[in-house]
Image 1 (spheres, rainbow over the protein chains, first blue to last red):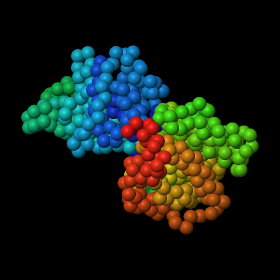
Image 2: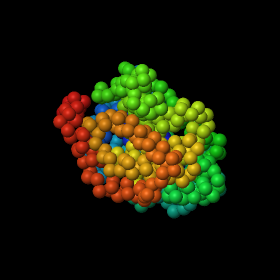
Image 3: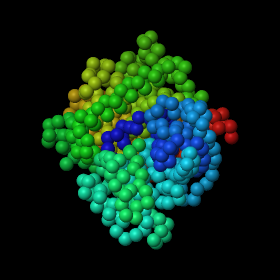
Image 4: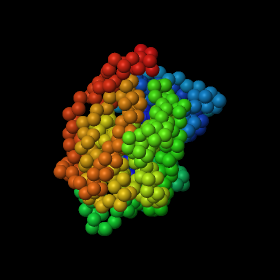
Amino acid sequence: MNVFDIIGPVMIGPSSSHTAGAARIGRIAYMLLGQPAKRAEILLHGSFAKTYKGHGTDKALIAGIMGMKPDDARLRSSFELAEQAGLSFEITTGHLEDAHPNTAQITLYGEDSQVSVQGASVGGGNILINRINGMAVEISGQFTTLIVLHRDAPGTIAHVTELLGSNGINIANFRLAREQKGGTAVMTIEIDGDAGKELNRQVAALENVLGSTMLKPI
Amino acid sequence: MLNYNTIAGLVEQAEQAEKPISELVLAQQAEQTERTEGDLYEEMRRTFRVMEESVASGIDPDLRSTSGLTGGTAYRMQQAVREGRTICGEVFGGALTRALAVSELNASMGRIVASPTAGSCGILPAAVLTIRDARGLDERTCVMSLFTASAVGMVIANNACLAGAQGGCQAECGSASAMAAAALVELAGGAPDMVANAVAIAIKNILGLVCDPVAGLVEIPCIKRNASGVANALCAAELALAGITSAIPADEVILTMKRVGDTMPAALRETAEGGLAMTPTGRRLFKQVFGT
């Protein structure tokens, strides 16, 4: 926790959890897609499902999906901007098992890729991304984060963490999830301070690593 | 090393160093976040300027919330001050005006600083900008006071909580009021122990306040509770600056707020299932907004 978790974020109202947090979840999905989205399918759960209209949660999610930050004054006109940008979207409400009350599930389709993200707005604008493409992750968006998709093979974690360590990078949080033994696995690594794109390229080039995405703090 | 476990700890370290709490917080935060003091100050200065802008934009007779339920009260308050129709005069009336302005802007999807939350975003800016104008303080002094306010917020977050859904309105507007009282004391030249007393008094006065938003929206009664939150901050700061102490120390008051919040029924913690939300008018407004 730091001072800007208390005095901040700078945001478009009315609700840090239902507006700013929603924009952040949308923006993580946008960053993971890595290209402009053509279509977005959004499922809202719990309090998000019940009160999204009064809080502008829907507008905030679409704004985030278009890459806007929670303090972007264009947030309140995001629907019009989406239409102009050729982004179609569908927002439905439903129930997700064992999900936080403020959860959104977003599937984005770009020109040649797609990504599915499930995230919760956990209070004060803070979020937690729980799933990416169905795999369990834990991303707060407060740190620079590496999402490393890799084969579940011995030594892979050591190679990645050694590379970070030799670059003087300290790990704040680490989480590993795998589909099954020997299958595909994902590391989510939140680091202190900043890291450049070059480091991400080096991680991606390591043995048994299938791909690496670096998210800047949002 | 400075930590945010207790208010007493902050006061002790500030007294030892013979510095205001804000300076210690800035130095500690630079170390924690691996950024320079200049960089952190600059970010807080930008934040402060957003606060100024949100006051200016919120004083608008035509401002309406997204739901259509609220808007325009900051302008009315300002008119009353300008026309000399207030009981307490310009400083108090100005504080109320600013708190209403920021809170109403928030409800209309305008740009604000959550401090600590969006629901309580009017209290701290109203306090700092009011004393700035009343005493002609410079920007640097005001920006620094926000570090003291955040330190108070961090202690509350570490020992209780800042979310209405967890601790009721006392956790949101109560915390904001305590943070604002702390900033006011430092800005008025009060000693660190006066900051602690102001925090204690501010929370004591608002202890037990429930979170019961009509239709679940951050509007009714939130906007007026922002006005009341800055009024309470002014009260707490004035008492502390006069040398009046709180019989119960700030840290015990904060833990009390946590205990009170824990025993508060869920209906009174931002679920819109109790309190004012369940009044006949509250239910009617819910239907008006959501149509069900």
